[in-house]
Image (tube, rainbow, N blue to C red; front, side, top):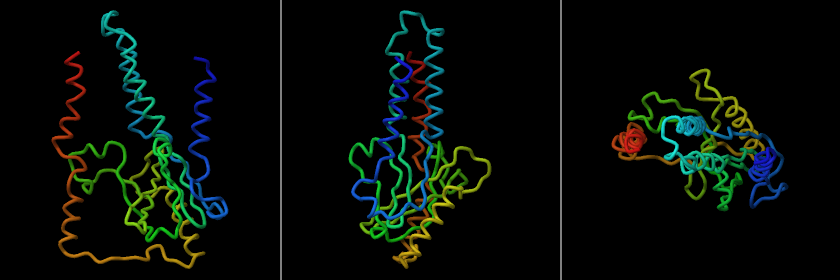
Length: 240
């Protein structure tokens, strides 16, 4: 494959994911207050690609030549395609709305990343899990690593989170520089509209509070699912 082909593919994807927001013109969005480019690949995606690359490279030395063929490259190619279609578009904050980062595959399916502020009821800091925290058998509130993003509650009841995961974790702080600048831009936009960040507050019953507390203590994935996921790779190796 010529060297310029991967570069052209990367340029095409970048143009696709950084294109104008769907369903809103530049005039309707207002001036751009802040732009944030997320990591193109998550740490777990990079780890998976490296692992598959090492295994694929070592396979010719571990198996007889007659057992090694082009199907051995299929998992690595599938992982590369998965990583490409997970590449996110940038998060952009405008005076009249926000464009939330979405992966390429969702944009291809017609998802609209742009949300006008008129459709947003509340904006607040929201914590989210990263990397392999979902595979932990412990509760998400029991010390697993979290970061802070922009929580958006929409008028139709949906909730979205704009994530600002850093490339390296130097301190155990939830608020990253990207989040701090994004929150400042949101405050500027809402102040210009004469709105508060939280304008629709509902009260919860004791039963609802207890249910949310139980949900916060529960693992992100059930223990049988976690055990099954950990035993799949050794089982595949043993079968081969």
